[in-house]
Length: 277
Image (cartoon, rainbow, N blue to C red; front, top):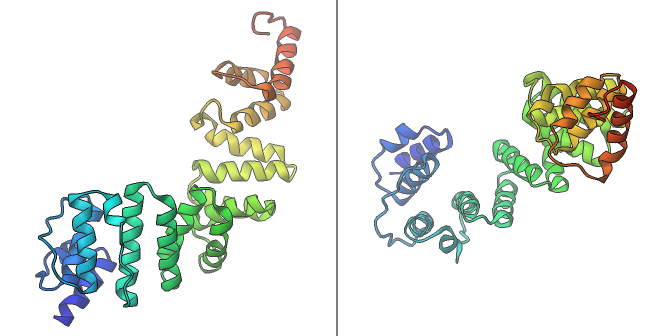
């Protein structure tokens, strides 16, 4: 039994779902890992009424409540378990259920507790960092990314996230350096191009900013601030037609657009295009 449990644990960690599925479910631990694999796959989970009182049985009960009732119900009275191994799985399960319930803070707290309990699980640490950056909680992400950038200095996602944190801190050279590493992996990816562009503006390199924006501006909404920046840079570099085409596509304007629109209007008049002006 101990060997089968160990195999199930290994197959689950390596995401070897087929091998995990083929293990006979002779323990609550194996049943738990098999149920979690079905959760990841988005498949229906058939769990008979759980009666055991060991840690994995208690977690299976949470999954049973999730399936039969709701994520909110599964979160109520969530157990805290003595075994670190089982508690680690409990925290990951709780994070997933919280995500399904739309409870971002509970999800974040569960993930943070997990990485504190498992400091060598760098994959989960990166996952948490990504979540925090997406939520604009950059200060909370910063300590994790400081560690990750040391261990994975050329990883594209690590550098993208790290660049965002460094820009927020005002470290524009570091932000651009990391953004460019991410760009080298995915030249047309929006996030690192925007970080690089705005860092370039802070560093006084407008040509670099315009080049970065040119890769992504067509995929940005018309009301995105980077659209305004791109039009301004394009106009300053003498491309009146390119700037005008962008402005005419805008669905709305705001007070901050007035100086730019006035400049373009004056240029249109100078060129004899009163209708456009």
